[in-house]
Picture 1 (cartoon, one colour):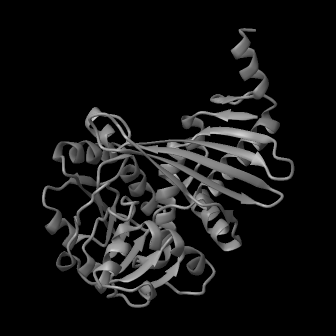
Picture 2 (cartoon, one colour):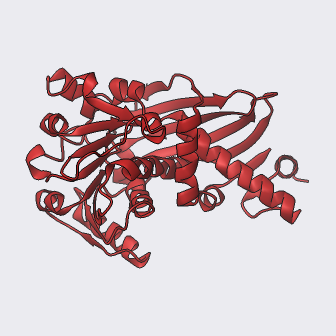
Length: 338
């Protein structure tokens, strides 16, 4: 069994390859088990969440991701999301790999947004606004740049100092990035707005969004959470990663339906329908498009298989251990001190 640390996993998730792997998975399909949520009480902090996300392709691979989401970690300078991934052989149930998956989660989440943007963002979209300053926001800047020629990145966060730090990091990586203090103004200047927050109240208002904008909603993953108001949902052409997940878990959609701004029929298509060509995506330059994702285990499986197959090929070609990868025999030796 391969054991891969986060650095190794991230280095094997090239953006074009990962986006294409997700497209292939949505096109071919796989079985996805129920996502199990367990709410966890955390002393002197907001409740945490334990997520179990299984998926499998018969005769090929079985995967399950175990995720913890602790919103209170932001105040401690710790990541809000941690994850691990287990990959098995679906022909015999044998374990194939254990991967640190926080980076995998962030990158596959951003890759799903970029895949949607292939169909929904204007071809000439060049100005990206990031709403949020966490791990996923960093990845979203890179992912969107893989499918559109992004010339400038604006970063907004509730904590302006964090927005400045993220803008600095992106600038050091070669992107034209700047922190912005006024979300209203920044939203009106953007071609793509990508939100990755844990907000329970709308951050974006319908009146701020100009025609032709693509709005990418990533962060809110519970029915009680949302990043935009229901009026914006009522104005927009809505797309989702999966209909089942969005209608059950996406507060931006659930609350808009509850308040009568939209109905389930307002969802134009999901990612599987977009990649299959069942729906063409953006149909008018002036459309406001919204893509809402809550994540699906099929995305994790696609990313994990991409990493695993590359590691197997590299290991076989080099006939030498790969830094960051631990074989099962090495792990046992380490445990027994031999």
